[in-house]
Length: 105
Image 1 (cartoon, rainbow, N blue to C red):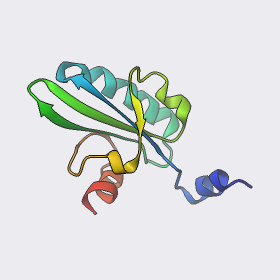
Image 2 (tube, one colour):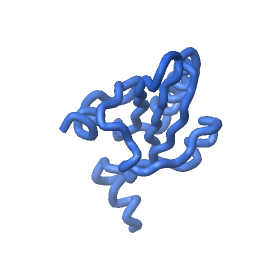
Image 3 (cartoon, rainbow, N blue to C red):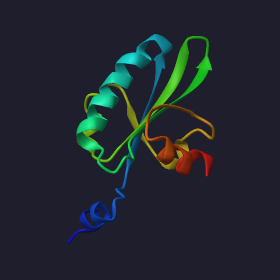
């Protein structure tokens, strides 16, 4: 059994992060895409969509998904590491408990 399969059995998956700067008016379409994916692919409730307002009408958005293929519809998002995440983002969508473990714990 692979380490990924073991992690799935334990309810913890290795997650991938990607980010992009967008106009604040575009967050709704990203959020809808994320919510659709979360319903279908997030049995362990680890997927997150977080943001930070940068200036004016521009925000930086990070998405956390379990599979690289799930990033395909997030056009223009670039992979990043956990070290690239902001210190105090806002939860846009996803599990508040997971968000708390990663950013408030």
